[in-house]
Amino acid sequence: MEEKKVMIQLKNVVKFFGRHKVVKSINLDIYEGEFLTLLGPSGCGKTTTLRMIAGFEEATEGEIYLDDVNMEGKPPYARDVNTVFQNYALFPHMNVYDNIAFGLVEKKLPRAEIREKVLNALEMVQLEGFEKRKPSQMSGGQKQRVAIARALVNNPKVLLLDEPLGALDLKLRKQMQSELKHLQQKLGITFLYVTHDQEEALTMSDRIAIMNQGRIEQLGTAQDIYEHPVSKFVADFIGESNILEGYVTKTDDATISVRFEFGQLDGIAASEFVDEEMIYVSVRPEHVKYSQKPVKDFHLQGIIKEYIYAGSSIRMIAELPNSQEIILLCHPQDTLPATGTDIYLYWNPDKAVLLHTNEDKLYDLIEDAVLK
Image (spheres, helix red, strand yellow):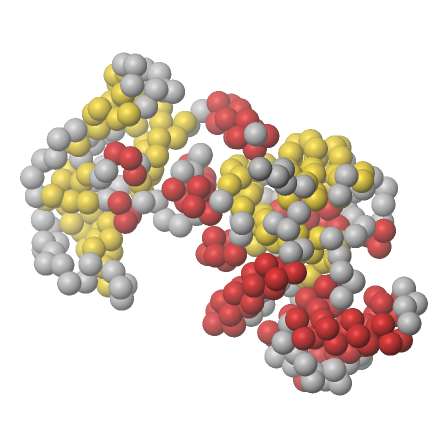
């Protein structure tokens, strides 16, 4: 099997703004032709990480390599990357053709070559015939396409995209997500994409790096991260999850029991937890089931609080004795018990994820997983 080529490599990258450490020792390999997304809430360090790769910020510590070349001290124009911003950054006094051609003109390429490259770029983003339009005469989606064409016309090794669809309405945003992914697959260029939109990341990415408080909390495919979150933060941030806090009451070679304030789970397959350890149990709403009779190994009883109609599904909200709410997804055609009914909650044990609450242990596991 052919080994993937690393296009971008971050080694122990740290960034301080004054005394504030905004990026905390990131190690990350991004492969040639990969669509990798940095995903996380505002202030998690994702845009700062992208800007260090682009050369707009210098790393305080660590090394950044682009195609095996150390980028230390290299200004943005000396790096074989181009950046697409949320606000497009188009020149308002120039038409579409001149906006896209700007970088090529600065390189003093022959006029015929510039024209050929610009027209090819316009074709890639489906804007043939728009050469003479000014940005003010275009929609948000069209302006975003021009910004992408301007970045691609230089044939960079890496395209950096910082919240590029953030200013678009929902329908156009979804359309552009699909177009961007298809374009990346067609061109085979490495895309590094920054967003706080979970659905956008899950839809478009080959791999996702979840960032939290300056760290990479988890790195993997969309399916890996959704089905096997490594921390409470990831389970809570990606999609929707029911998270129960408890402690381990019994262990043997292969199973544990977990005691909650309001009930207990028995016979859970797990070996990396110890007696009395505090843990989280995370289970997605689509995996939670209910019964009006007790279920073996599950001692979790609640009351149906309300139903919320959501078109293709109905959200059942069950309230536990400690007032914590658990969400279940039901089919609209199901005959459902009345609100106020006592029910027992259960799930396929393979569909629940057990998570450490100890941060030191958690980050040791995360670092090991990212470096593999």
